[in-house]
Image (cartoon, rainbow, N blue to C red; front, side, top):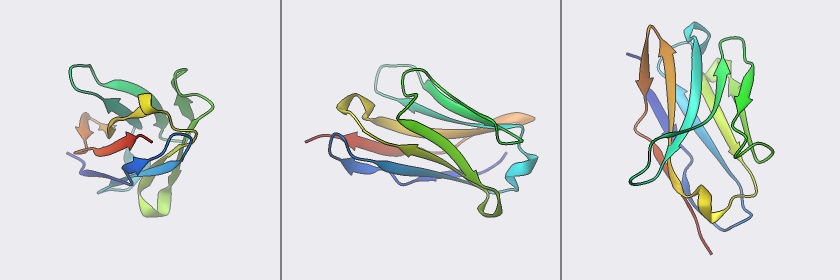
Amino acid sequence: QIQLVESGGGEVQPGGSLRLSCAASTNILTIRSMGWYRQTPGNERELLGSMSLRGDTNVAASVKGRFTISRDVAKNTMYLQMNNLKPEDTAMYYCNAIKGWTSWGQGTRVTVSS
């Protein structure tokens, strides 16, 4: 499977911004699609957005206008830019990649609090 490593999480105040990174172990142009998810205890993993092989993106309505997905092909990395963060955004954030099967990273924690 593809190895994925999320980074960039941390603690931020409401209204602040974070940029999460998802570094893949292979050329991301060989990956059918990649996505960002988040999960809180007791809840199912929530899809935040996805990116196709050619770079088209979709973002969930719940975070549209605040979250943006992008990538740097040369670095085999997908990003999640999160702006105007709210306490409700506190969660563990994961990326995944689909290439014959689905691979998941270990996650990076985001905490939004005063």
